[in-house]
Length: 157
Image (cartoon, rainbow, N blue to C red):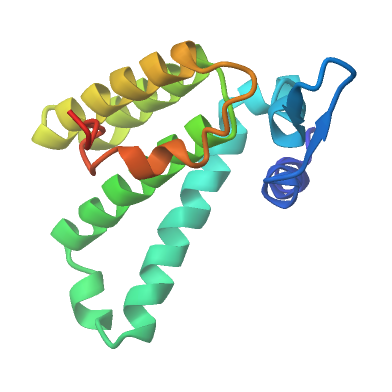
């Protein structure tokens, strides 16, 4: 059994660390680590999604919105926002486009089937997957997230 929590923490704690090789190319540590097979295992990202959902719920309770936070609509909204956060995180850590798309498709079908959010999530996943494919090894994709709006559209277009 993999230790998903430790693998995720490793990604978090290596963000921004880089080295320069003999050809003076910048190599981001997170990008190198992300190539390990554990990060292609969607169970890791399921746990990350759960962490994001718990964080959203905790933040709502801390801000005095406890009663509102438990409504069905708010729970679905929290699930959607947590999923979007997880997809952006996958992009930022350099996950493969196929893994990002598989994760988004599964979550969209399981949690948002036949809703507008399912279509929005799939559209976002397509856009992020294209960005994954277009990324160069020296790109720091964590800064890329700032260029997209909440629907995954490029803010500069």
